[in-house]
Every structure is written in structure tokens, then in C-alpha cells.
Length: 327
Ligand SMILES: [Mn+2]
Image 1 (spheres, rainbow, N blue to C red):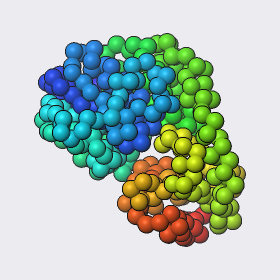
Image 2 (cartoon, rainbow, N blue to C red):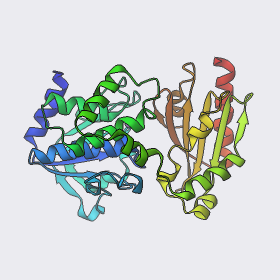
Image 3 (cartoon, protein in one colour):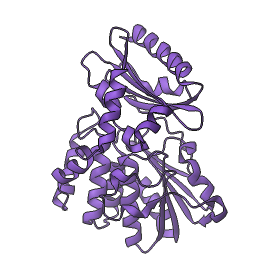
Image 4 (cartoon, rainbow, N blue to C red):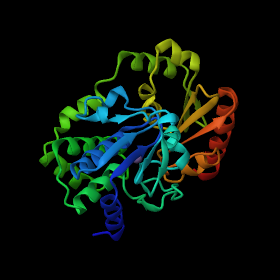
């Protein structure tokens, strides 16, 4: 058994009150990991909260007990915890407003699979070979012989399925399928979860995608594709943050495309940049780091100041240049 897991377990056993945090704009890995760990620690009799800046996206409401993952309370109600555990969060900053709800925490654990994670916890478990933080949580729960309930298994399956692009991305290993098989043995209905995850989008999402694709931009002999989403368009379609997740895959899936980019105008005046690479020679976490972000080699992001036009021009120029040098 990994001694790091042992240290995590000791910190958990020593704590009464535990806050499990994840990143803003949570994805399936963030929500699934938070929920699985929360349910397991509650079984140990711990007082656990699970917070992220945006709370639970509607798209994950089908998960049993998911309503326990919430937005943090206002700073006036900030609490003291024995232990805070950050999951799937590459930088402390990405914990956003959850930090204001924690007056203090006796100890910080940081569990993640982003190679760019600087290790901002007192104890850091960063495994960039894991395709999902949910896979690390699974290994941890197994190492502690914690019971795998149906709800925990569902949450872990959602985490792993979504972060591997439904078991398609290169980080999908034999171990990933072994874990998936075990989760299915524990009661996961893979077809039903896939229907909830991949075949249950609101209509506004496909209408939005239609408009974005009409204005898609292709550069560098179609090796770079990008979509731009303005605040005006978001308002017109009444877009929720979770509607936007995965839209980038539509241009990523074009045969010639090596790098896909999604630009989104945020309320705070910044531009959210998502990047996907299909080519090992283009490390988008390095490119995003130049714009203040980070992530994985093939999937990364950043938030940059400036107008949509300005930021997209700057980023595209940099990416096109990189494609020219590396491919
Ligand atoms: Mn993840």
C-alpha cells in the first residue's frame, strides 16, 4: 500500500470536520470525486461538506446524493475545519470562492492528476499518470478497504468515464478498464450512466452548438480550429456553464485538426480559454501556462484579461506559431 495513502488516511482519521473542495466550473471528475469521497468519509462518521464555487451542475443531478455537493456559504458564515481536501484542482486559485468559506483548516491535502499542480497542500498526492482524479480516489478507498456502495461506485464511474472521454483518450489504461469492470460488478449500470452523461443534453445546447459551428474558425491549413462564445450569445440561449462542456469536442473531432480551442467571454471581463491537442508534439498545458493557466498535455485551459477579439487573436497567433515549429 502506498505510504502516501497511509498519510492521507491518518489525516482523515485524526479529523472530525472535513471540507472536500474542487475547482470552479466543476466537471464530471470534480463532482464524481467529491461525491465518492464525501459518501465514504460520512460512513466513517466524519462531518463532511463538499463545496465548489458553482455548486452542482444540473447535468449531474441524476447521481444519488449529488445534492450534497453545494456552493460554499457566504464568507460571513466561514467555518473552521480540521481538514480540507482539494480534489482535481490544478491551482489553489481554481478553488475560487470556496476558500472564503474556510476560516481556517488545520491541515490541507491536495489530490490531483494535473501535472502542472504545484503542490499547494501540506500533503500532496499528484499522479499525472491517472486519467482521472476519480481513479486516485478509487485506489485510495480500496487501499483503506472502505465499502464500495452503489452510490460511490456510480460517482467514481462518472468521474472516470467523463475524464477519459468515455474511455477514449490516450490516458485510458488497462487499470482504468479493470476499475470500470469492478465498478460495474459493484452495481454500476454503464448504459444508463452513459445515457445520463452523453445523451441527455438540453435542446439549447445543440442550438448553441449550431450557431458556434457556423462561425467556427480554421487556421494553419485546418490544423487549428476554434470556437468563440460571446456573452450576448450566452444570454440569448440562456446558456448554463455545463452546457458549454464538451462543445470543443465537435471541432477537435475534425480529421485535420491538431489543436482545438474554445474562447468564452466571462462576466468578470476575462476570457476563458480551453485547449485540446490530438498531437503528442503539442503540449497545450505548456501553451496555456503562457496565458496564466495549466492542465494536462492534451487538455488544458486558462483565463486571460482582454476582449474576446484581442485574446483570441493573441492565443491563435501563438498556437499557429507552435504548430509551424513542431509539426
Ligand atoms: Mn480531472
